[in-house]
Length: 496
Image 1 (cartoon, rainbow, N blue to C red):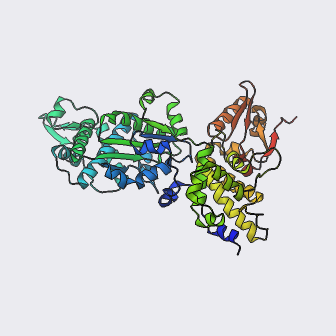
Image 2: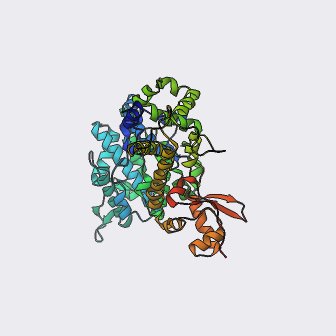
Image 3: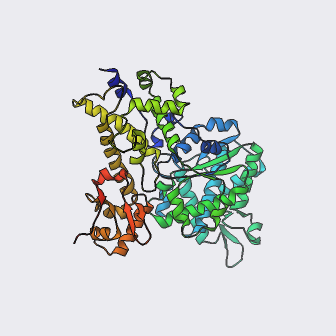
């Protein structure tokens, strides 16, 4: 076996999904200014397109819990990082209004805080006040799954929303029954006399107890796109309520929500107007440029000691110098994939993994790199020559790898997340890559106005890139989806 093939066989460039490589993330994580602002506590909300690295930041935040603990911060996941989302049962029987959802979020967060206080055996007056209120409501769970905790909170919120909290005896006027003493709003005078407390006052008490403990809690939420999948109305109610809860809780200096959310979902929940959005200022949006994507890819490559030895390079020296990174790529890759006035190989990779929004997500770039390794090995195994000179990969391996990435992106992302648009996308199979409302109307067998509305929906999800002008729109399918649909280069024409 040659040294080149040996280096390829031993190589691993990681998983495209952060949840599948939590233990490895720290080894090739690019410590950006965005990460530093999140880790320092300066930013609470992280937006980013799908595949941009939100879950990687979330996973690293949880992974670095010990470092944060040394700063007096306890990291508490409020959603399952893997497997069935804790909110799955809430989706089946959701609150009936946004106000109820606000109450659900706040009571859930209070329950999590109480659990931490209980685990640390905090017995201050403020802590006991929280324990007592939750115990009376049947919600004091020092230990228990997030799913069970949420189900109990949901049932309580539903119960006190549809029934009077205090039930009076009709004959004597005395209190006959109490369905928990936590009110979703400020209690009236009669309720206060009976010992009822509002959610907000109990959150204040939990905050005070944590201050006495001299610890802060970061409640971190990711995978919200999975939690409320395929139910736009529920998603909008739930997430608008979450951000309202976030703003209501901003005054709590010991309890902070850290929310990781896709930009397209944020756009959906605000497109009809969201007055509170202007008050959400401690946020950042993940963005990647050519330099940061190159650094990310080189970290994935150079974590492989066999590749570093094959090229006789010092990984730390390479990662600290962009010119050396470009030089190493020129040794590993062919100069171009397509001849003529086409981009160099790395820029070809960025262009081929870019969606209709113009963004290249790290997920697709990582997937292309991993598929490239597999494609090259398959070519060698069936009898093709190894790449010439020092190169690890030949041109055809890149094209084969792109087809794999294209198929996965189309079927496991677009079709899975937007099933209502699947038939329109699949109808384009074998068609030209550039379309107009008239050509789309002919393909989809609808009127041109309806075709334009559908096409604009496909622009929103990044399948189409909108081109042309307002009165003469054109829709261009990015290279990322062309192989999966076997699209033909060129502009479509109306038949007849």
